[in-house]
Image (cartoon, rainbow over all chains, first blue to last red; front, side, top):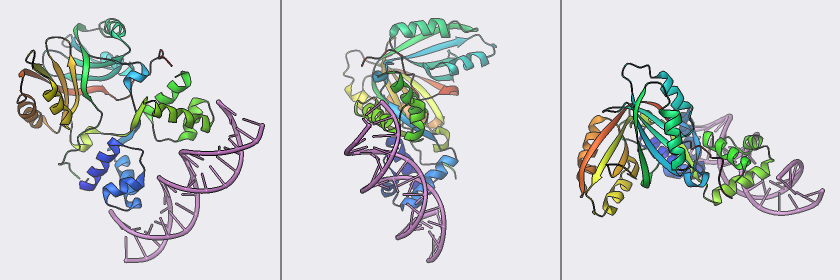
Length: 154
Length: 154
DNA sequence: TCTGAAAAGCCCCCCGT
DNA sequence: ACGGGGGGCTTTTCAGA
């Protein structure tokens, strides 16, 4: 993982469909050497996959909400995690520091769907003590492009 | 936007690099008809782009944090939004309901970098009254795959 | 590990159906 | 909307360094 790999990863996050010829220009290498590096980044798991990036509004899930969840202390969390993982509306589910236990990020068509999901799919889970829902009412930024850090080991 | 388009979008979110031949099988159409649909979904903006999906840990940004920000009421928010948009570590920045004004999602190498970013890049912004940082200490789910809703207009 | 060129495969455009 | 075919581009492979 050197400077060239990092440049490749930056380019592929922005546009993963422009082809090896253009990527080779960014990398400053030949096409075949570039292809080799991309293949290795895939094999190592640095590149997990290739995805189409969709417009949320165009597919009917314009409403973005974050739900904080407090689980009863000592309760086994496996069932909760499994349920969240299985729900398509759940984009993220993190165990967090602070007074809450989990933070769940949801994408759903509208407010009614969020209310329903929180009531039926989150609050109904065993061990859930309380929840607090925060709605996004406008986004300045929302990207899946990760910063590619300088310092990474071989 | 019909059932077939939705199936195509689901498949392309999971794997956007498998080629039209395989996608045509999922869609139940010929290759040419499938290609036509993908092209139209791109032209309409439903498909915004094609991205490589990277492993955060592999590129040195394993630490995930959410920072709540309260901006002084009445203060113009443009500068804050611009600053957040320009920062690579900021993956998301949403205006939110509730007692806070903004929710910022960060990805950085470690805790020290998060502390530094909050102090120097968030709290230093004009109009920021207070912040609260929530760290993710484990993720049950983190995906950029959106649910493709049933009901969407033509 | 990179280069360069040849070979194979895929995509795109067009057509007729 | 389907299927086929040709042209062009991209990816892949393979020598050589």
